[in-house]
Length: 379
Image (cartoon, rainbow, N blue to C red; front, side, top):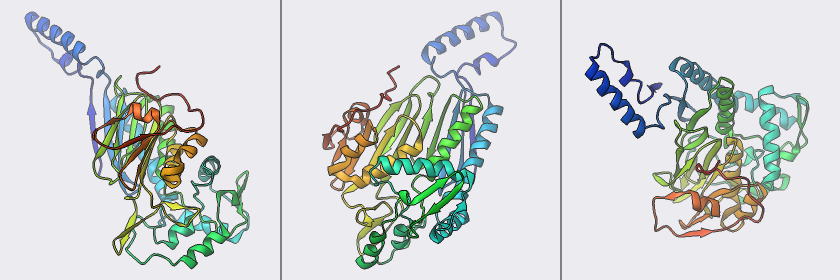
C-alpha cells in the first residue's frame, strides 16, 4: 500500500487567501513576519511517501521540490528498489540463483551489468574489513537455514558440516571479474547480498535523485537510513535502535551525506531450544556471532559502506571492533555487547543523544586516523 503526503512551506498557506481588506491584510502580513521568525527553517516543501520492498516499508522524504517533480522522482526510486529486490534479495531472486549455479561450475560467464559495480565494491569492502564482511558465505547461511526472510526453527547443523565448509573457505577473493566476465575458482562460493542489497538500492536511488536536482532527501528502510542535505535547513534526526530491535536507544542529528546502519541478532533469526541463531555468520567459525547484540555505524557517505562496516563490526565483537573501525576509516561506531554494555568511538559518544543516561558506556578509540566529522553544526 502506498501512502503519500505533501507539506508546502509553512507560510504558503497564509499567503494564498484573496479578497482581504486593508486591516486584514496588514494583520496577515504581521502574522507572516512572526511566523517567519518562528519557523524560518521550515519553508521548503516536504514530500513523503511509503512503499513496500525488501520485506519492509520503505519511507522516502524529498525536501525542497515541488509536488509534481517529487512524485516523479519518488516513482523512479520505487522502481529502483523493486528491481534490486527482485535481482538480489533472498532466495526468491532467480537471477542470484542462476549466478551462483554458474559460479559453482567454475566456468566464465557474462555477469549482469547491474551487478558489476556491487561486485567490485563488495570485494573492496571485504578486503578493508579483513575478510569479516564476506558476501561469499551463502552456503553457510543456507546450511543454517537462514537464507530465507522468515527462517523456520530447526536443529542447528552439526559441527562436521560446518568444518567441511570452513575447510574450503569461500571468500570474495575467489571471484575474478574481467570486464563483464565473471568466474570463480572455488565451487563453494555462493553470493549472498541480503545484508547490503537494500543499502545498494539506497545508493542508486540517491544518485538518481541528485541527477533530478534533489539536494535533500531521506530514505528509511526498516530503521536503516541514507540522508542527503537537510530537512528544510534543520539536521535530520536519525534514531538509533536498541539491540532488542524494539525502541530507540539514542538520536543522532546529522546534515549532509550520511548513512546509518544497524546489524542486530534480532534480524532474520530463529530460536531452537531457547537459543537464538541469527544470520550474521562469523567467517572464522562458520557460526552466528555470539558476543555482540548489535552494531551501529554512521558513515559519511554511501549506505553500502555503512552496511558492510556494521556487519564487520558486529563480527569483530567487543574485543576487536576498534581495529576494524580503524582499518575501514570509521568515525562513528556503537557496539552493544551481549551483556547490554555500550562501547563506542569518542566521536559517536559526542554526537549521540542517549535516551538511557544510566547505560554503562565504554569509550574506545580506533588505532587509525578518522575521516572528517558528520556533525550537523560543522561546515
